[in-house]
Image 1 (cartoon, one colour):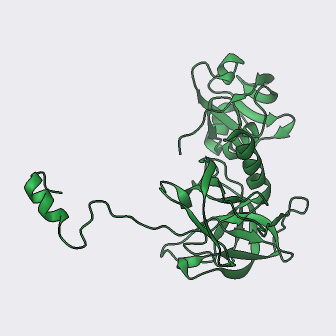
Image 2 (cartoon, rainbow, N blue to C red):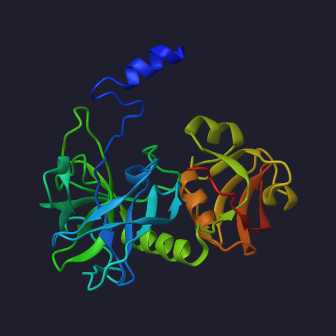
Image 3 (cartoon, rainbow, N blue to C red):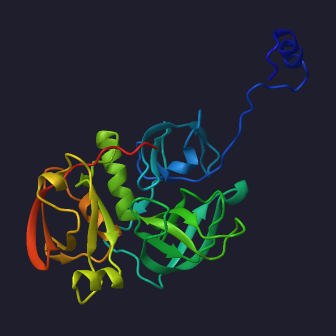
Length: 299
């Protein structure tokens, strides 16, 4: 835009000139309650000035953002319409590898589309997509525009929120990832109740063990997580944890990697006592730490 006011006025009078050009982003969402709550991905609505929801029956409604969770890339919206079709969560029957699943969304903006596949794998993590990763992997075709849509079982129950694809071309290669319905439901309920998600936190910087590190510490196996650092005034530091501690168990269950440890800590309620089995200076010891409230991550 020219700095000179005369030239600026000239350009503003030109047909079709716009100083600020609006862009449109397409995505999908899942109606989860009669009160008009919708689950979708944060990256679908991030930065939006206006959000318009179009239902399959032809109705449209502006939506407001109830809350977002950057750590799981989920967002909760709300619309004000009556007689809404609501999906059922498949909480009591989690998916199994090989189960037939259907992905619903609006790929490339062509309209509501359903693709079929199977559950290829469970508990996928370490992908660098979200802070907390426990994805359902599916080969059901998921393309741009499917983000935020439903992954359902053959009974029409929600088992996941389609979030990402592995692709070098931008199209589907049969490797898609969905946030499990159990995790999505927990995020939904906390955002409705508090406006954000409350998570446990110790303020640690964990690192996966390697075979070389295990040998250096005198361990027979390379399982566990080494503490590479801690934040000042963190619950971990106050509770007596030290840099170099190797966390092997949490509340009696084995810890195999950093993603598992962070996810389990996050699932604790702030103020809850966590018992960690730690290998320190060649000896086994037990630490009891009080979980803090994880600071909100900026979106």
